[in-house]
Image 1 (cartoon, helix red, strand yellow):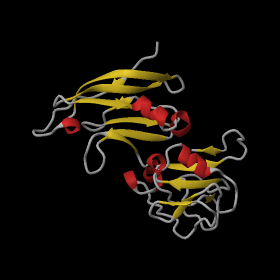
Image 2 (cartoon, helix red, strand yellow):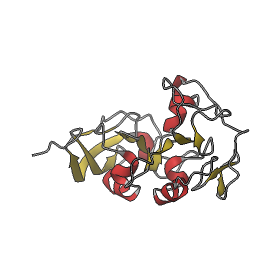
Image 3 (cartoon, helix red, strand yellow):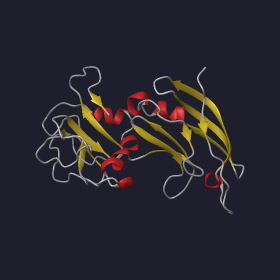
Image 4 (tube, one colour):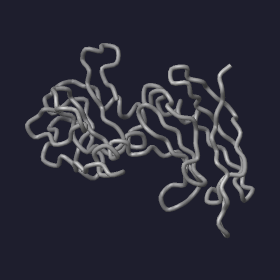
Length: 225
């Protein structure tokens, strides 16, 4: 039988805190799926905060709704409480936090900006910035504040299908804003590169929370994360 693990550390609440801010009093698994590959579950969690407010954090439902294995890969941790009143799970291709959104409000699922922790200045990484000068002349939708398109064609006019992939798996809510257009990593004007990996001819597009790659040799799934 698969072992179900939800690590929830119950913490003491400062005076006057409410709901998620108070930390957890109890948590139970309300549904689970075990993934043999990395020996972890994705679960739905229900319980109460220390102030008595009930909560439900459906990690499994959110995982399946936002692309499952194709988007996130296999779970690489249990659901854990990294900060009082929040829950987090790590996957091969990203991290999901269940927490109050910026500015406050009811807890919700928020993806971490994974690329920004590798090359965007968060967590002590080197900030590679944004490729403002290299843009895509092909049809597509301008997404975000930096003037980059999400398109099914790359800068080099290669049919890559990135836009279809992007919108099918959640768009900005899943991937964040693009920091580059889709282009070969060794393009003369390309500035963003995966740390520790020499630039190559693979077509990539860098988003705040992910990097999309084009693999024409994979006929069934040529777009990969």
